[in-house]
Length: 303
Image (cartoon, rainbow, N blue to C red):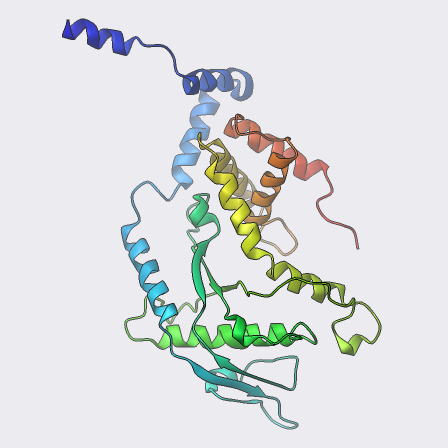
């Protein structure tokens, strides 16, 4: 009876995933060899073959260090002649837009992992981990969106933060490779005037307004990405995102003005919402559909 039951389990009904795989191999890949090559490519560029225990530990230590950094009085002052003066020597080389910037520096309000590492769409050999720090709201005044004040405070804050990490004892950040930070400020988007740069007179400051508005929406966009990929039960959407990143890298898409991996992932979310893609698609079909959309649809407004 035990042997018969074992044979019965081995000869069970074909699962939905197996039927889907057979159908994709026949209709999309056209050959078993192409399907095998695609699967092998995904295995080669996936950095998650084994648990990244050391990296996860380092990230937890980094978060602990960021939240425990001491407060400081930080300022920068432009001089009529000579180099600018600053509260700390590592801030004197900065080129800020305003004559002077002063703020009380505090540790980040929030530290999160964001980007392709958290979505599991990062591709080898360029393994990067995006750490987002939320700047304290107490640093900003109501009208800091005027005249590059926000950009100056952000640069001053992150420069001091990078210096503290690079000089901290037993820091997990190497001093030979300075860290890069993504600022996620907690600024409320509201109806600002068309011109927020007084040097332009009455002309609208469209590029600067767009910069501040985009940075105030990062947290919302990241939440949208995570919620979208969390519904990808089969993993085909993640595989398609990885294949598209490899496709962009082969075309040297790291040049200025080209699509980034973050932008191509947002495009896939847009195609899902417009039903040009679906969760039932295989990775190959989702990749082809997304690449076709990039080549055919205008993804930016002409100047």
